[in-house]
Image (cartoon, rainbow, N blue to C red; front, side):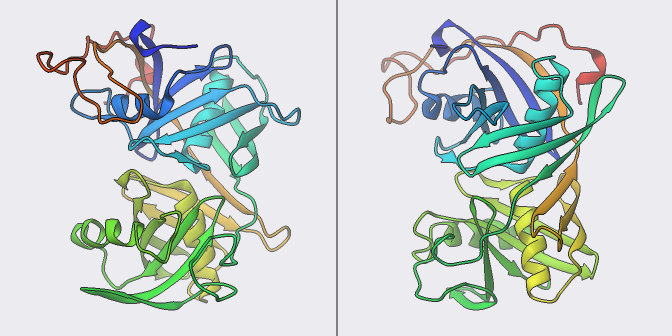
Length: 322
């Protein structure tokens, strides 16, 4: 088992600013990933990220590896579009899997990646996100409707219509006239935990610019607002097409950059294409941890929460993003 007390060797990567801490668990499992995700994700006392992603062995013979995603609150997510692209770059650029087509095992099922390679490094990744699920049972929604498309939704201070789409994880999409930080931060957490969504939900606020371009902001379940969400962008593209607002191939503008999303008429699958980048690597060795499932606090009352310096090791200049 990999233990945090022994020093955690990590790689930090980002896709459109959606940053995660990546740990190679192909040889050894990571002890208490739910707790470690909360520690390393802290942007003041940890490394700082939207969560933790583990690259693991899969028991499925069809898969090249398994991806596990933990949000910064410690909850485990089903899948992550930006994380998938980063995992593809990670295993190829580090010569773990020198293949331009990869199959990744996730809690949402098997996902196919197509890697575009330039000078022996991955420059972009196309992800087959699979078919969207639109029934209330698959989502799920606490309602007896077969699906939940363009349905009325109201909470104090906010009245709109919602379309629910699952891309292996649940998304509630709201089309609005104006996107603001106040809108996302005031109503995102309320909708995330609304009783309509028994498993909680990722919340997307969307402004349609024209039939090929969309602007969106996302409040992620267990993470809060992030700069980008690949599954969210995929769900938004499906919702916009279902409501007759856009074509099935759209450019989506997120705070961290743009994604191209296509909902194919041929196979009903959603495809997303975008980049992935290394930020840094190092060893994280904090002097802490007390108890699984408890709030993160010092080992004893007299000890202050302190992290040892992060050691940056063997990073090429081109891999460091300022």
